[in-house]
Image 1 (spheres, helix red, strand yellow):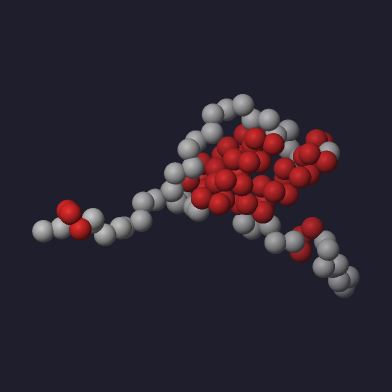
Image 2 (cartoon, one colour; image 1 turned 120 degrees about the horizontal axis):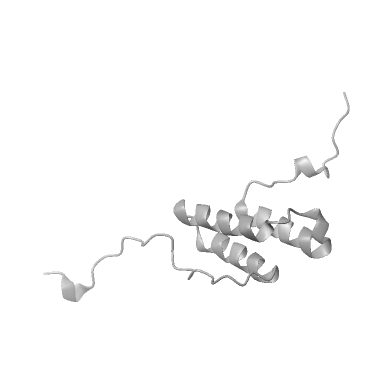
Amino acid sequence: MERRSSKAPSALPLGRPERVTTLLVQAHLADRTATPPNLIARLRDMEQVVREARGDRQTLQVIASGRRLLGDAEDFATLEPAFEPDLPAPASETG
């Protein structure tokens, strides 16, 4: 049985959305034929999934940056936190 090289694409950690975004955008900028023709739409979909999953701001920022680099003209959603942390009420509001 043949052993795979540690540099084989299937051996790379591709699970995190920000890593996937970075790799796809870099590949597209190097060779437009190396990525799907609908990459911007896919990134928009990925952004929506991350928002619905209450993902972190860093992931959303990486996706938005990738879309900008690819020339996406669609409005970018504000990068508000995907959820609001439970903060204690200000002292003036407690009785």
